[in-house]
Image (tube, rainbow, N blue to C red; front, side, top):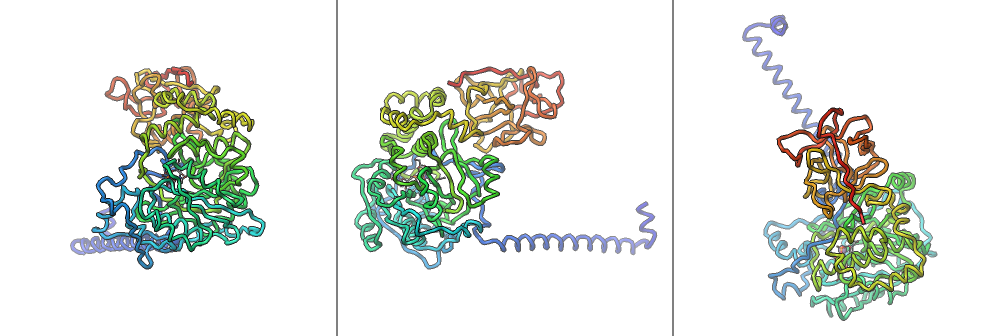
Length: 598
Ligand code: LR7
Ligand code: MN
C-alpha cells in the first residue's frame, strides 16, 4: 500500500529525495511549533507582575489540594555558634540603591552566598540580603481589585496601637517592620507603635535603636528586664497601649498598602480577633511573595499549627464576596488586631506561657468558646519571614518550654480532647500536674465559655479528631499489616501502602472512621481512591474518600473493594493499596480493632 503510494509519483533516487524532503519539512514544522509555544508561554508569564509569577516553596508550604505549613515546633537553632561577638553585635545595615525595591528578591554573588550561609543561623534568615534592602523599600499593592474598591470611613474607625515584640532581632528587619507601618498607615488611625524588647542581648538593639527611633514620633520602646517570651512581652505592650485597637506584629514583617483599615474596620465590632492575610517574605531573598488566596488556620493531633484549605461554605462566600472577612478555627498567632477592651475582657493572655508556642491556639479556643470569633480579612496583606528554625535560646530547653505551654492550653480548654492529647503524648502528660492553671479555669467559668465539643462541632466540623460518634482504632488487613500513613511522609500525603500495626499508643497507626465513611489520619489526611492506587490526601468532599463498611470489606461508592495487593511480602507491609473488583481475597478482608481515644 505504502509502496504503491510512492511509486504513484516517483521512483528510485527521486523517491529517496522526496521522502527526505518530506521528513525535513515535518521536522522544520515541529521546530517552529515548539518555539512558538515557548514564545507564547514566556509572553504570558511576562504579562503578569513579577510577584504574581512567583510560587512559594512547594515542599514546605502547599500540596495540590490544600496547604499546610509547618509553622510550629522547631528544632531550636544554635544562635550562630562560631561567630565572633563583634559579628553578632554589630549592625551592618548598608542599603544598596534599588535592592529589593518593589518587593523583588535580592540575589547574591557566589562569594557572598558563602558569608550569608555562615551568618544564617544568627536569625534563620538571610541577614546579608536584609542589610542591603532599604528599611523604606517599596512593595507592590497586594490587594485584590475588590479590596481596593472598599471605601472606609476613616474618620470613624477606631485608632490603633501597633505592638511589635522582639528578642535579638536583626536591626534592618526590625526597622523595616517599623517603617513599613509608619509609611503605610493613615496618620489619624495610628495612635502609637510600641516596640517591646524581650531582654535582647545584641548591642545594636540598645542605644543605637533608641537613637534611631527618637525622631520618629509615635514610636516608643519598652524593655523587659528578664527574658519572658512573646506572651509576657505582648502583655507589657498591651498594658501601655492608648489606642482603641491592639495590633500585634512579629518583628520581621512588612505591611503593604491599605493594610490597617480593614483590620480596624472589623476590630471595631468588639467581638472578633481579626488577622491579616499573611504573605511570605522569603527567608533567603526577602522577596515578597503572595500566598494562597484562602487559608484556614487549624492544628494537628499533636497540636501543631497547620494551614488547611477552608471549608466549602467559606470558599463559596469568598467567591461571592471576596473582600469579606471569613472565620478561621485558629490563628497563626503573630499578626492580629483586637479591640483593647475585648482583649482584656477575655483575659489577655495566659501569663504563665513562656518564650514561644501554644498561645495562638489558647487564644483562638478562648475567643471562640467564650463568645467571640477569629477571622481573616483578605484585604489586609502583611508579609512575614517564615523561618525553618528558631534562632534564639529556649531557657530550660525547647521541649520543656513548648510542652508546658501546650499542657496549659490543652488542660484549660480541650475537655475530653485534652485526655486524648495527653494519652498519646505521655511526655507532656508527665508535666501536666506541674502547671497551675486554676486561674485560667476560673476565667473560663466566669466567662461562661462553651465546651470544646461545641467548638469542634460548630467552628470546625470538618476536623479530623476522634469523637464519640466516630470510630477510632487500627484497621488491620487479614494479611497482617495495617492501614496507616507511611512514616516519613510529610503532611502532604502520598501513595497508600500497608504499614506495621504498632501498639495501642502508637498514634501514627491509629485512624478515625467517620459515620459517613471517611478514613482519617492525623494531619487531616483521608484515604482516597486515586487513579489506580489508593492515596492519602487532604480530607475533602470527594466521593472518592468514602469507604463503606460491608461485613469485613471496605467498599467504594461504585462497589469496588479496598484491596491490599499481593506481593512477595508475607505480612503485607509496604504492599500497595487500591480498590478492585470484590473477590475472594485475603487482601480485601479488614479487621476493625477499636482503641479507646481517651
Ligand atoms: O522569647 C521570645 N521573645 C520574643 O519577643 C521569643 C520570641 N519573641 C518574639 C520574636 O522576636 C518575634 O518577633 O516573638 C515574635 C514571634 O516569634 P517567632 O517569629 O520566632 O515566631 P513564629 O513566627 O515562628 O511563630 C508563630 O507562632 C508563634 C507561637 O508562639 C507566635 O504566635 C508567633 O507570633 C507566630 N508568628 C506568626 O503567626 C506569623 C505568621 C506565621 C504564619 C503563618
Ligand atoms: Mn515570626
